Image 1 (tube, helix red, strand yellow):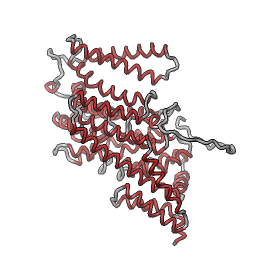
Image 2: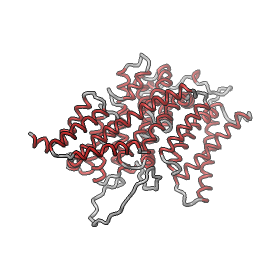
Image 3: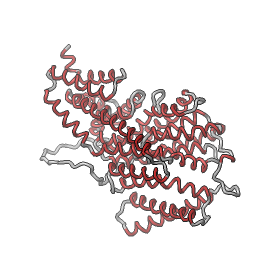
Image 4: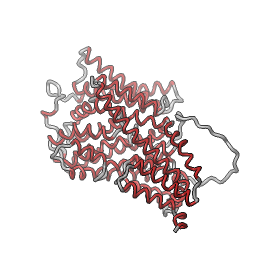
Length: 538
């Protein structure tokens, strides 16, 4: 019996962890207790030396000294302040009025605002609760199907998991040992594509089931001109002028700086064009120029502040002016300035945001400490070699590995949230992926899209619970669950597309600002034949 335990201690340890988690014991303490218990078992059996556990204090100190993890409380605080600043309410009302005349207009507005909130808050709870409180009653009042309305709100809220500045991408970058900035840059296109797929589903339903998504009645559109005109033509003219200014600046500044990368030049051009549009709208309001319609003016004043915040956070990260941690700090300060501008900032709001941020940050750190204890012992009993052998022996090579790992993450997402998946499983499968030649930035984005489904899985999806807490009584829990299923299918399709078309994820190698100093000592080694590599671009 003892020899059997010695030979199979790694799978026994992993199975015991699954039993701990399914029993409902807190994840952080399950990981730490499991690691310590099997550490002592390994010492008694002679597999481990007691000195191994002396590495734990240094590992825990390394977690506390990790500057990258500071971005989590910064972005969480930013999202919670924005949730209470009135920005989501103004966005949903204005964009809903803009899309109101077309079928499914409010659903399109929810998707658009969900993507915008994702790029500013990065917090699923804030997005789902805000849109559930504001949009769900409006959609039900004007005859939207309950299942569709619930599914659109829950799915749009989960965009905060993949569109930067996503918390899950910060954790993935930390666990995979890659740059957060590179992970953000790589996830941008998949996030926008997923948003477009949600909108495509709404468009298809508006054609096939038009009664599910009625247009807003005329009396509900309150941003019309005095003569009854919608004011959309004025908005289109302003958009065309803004695009022309951005294009002209791009050509002029690009000619003056020919070595500047195209994406950085695009960010500068967009910032200048949007700034000109905002100044023009200010002049129109305070100088009584009457050149813009009510709709155009409202859209500018509601849409540009969050866009400015996005540039402050993501733009500075992408062009290399700030690290993700510094970007998070600037985002938190910018969120407070927006709350001051909307006259919503008070001590009660700040205290609530700080309380929630502290709880989430402590939750993350304790899980990370527990996973560190578990991973130290698990590697000590050669658990990493067991996982590597198990996954590399799968049929199908790299493709078989990707398929099995994604199915495993999808199934475990029914029971575990994304933090638990990231801290328990990603450190196990990441080294195997790297050994197979898979780019870890690409792999991290792929798993991030997959783990997004953990918020949408009936019956344990957190986004569904958030929506249930604010939904009116006429919306049944079964309506929320059935409404989520089509969007879970869309997310699965997105995972398949990333595997089939790897170039959807941008993994260009660029110089990125380092947040930590690393001491590297080059030791002469014998040259070996390089292992076969997997290029996700093939």
